[in-house]
Amino acid sequence: ITAGADVVMLDNMSIADMRKAVKLSNGQVVLEASGGIMLENVREVAETGVDLISVGALTHSAPAVDISLKIVK
Image: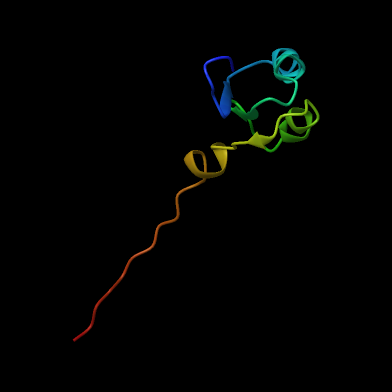
């Protein structure tokens, strides 16, 4: 924060550590929570007071879909 950061990524932090970071930042920067966040715990993460939440599981853990494209002349 003292170096002039606008956004700080809270990556793979515990809920308790996220709460501490929110308190320490005192609204001076945007805080983004990321890493280990799933639909099952996103509410608890939101309740810490972070500004943004990245849920990578929505894309990297999505089940594959088998599709094909057939071109007929």
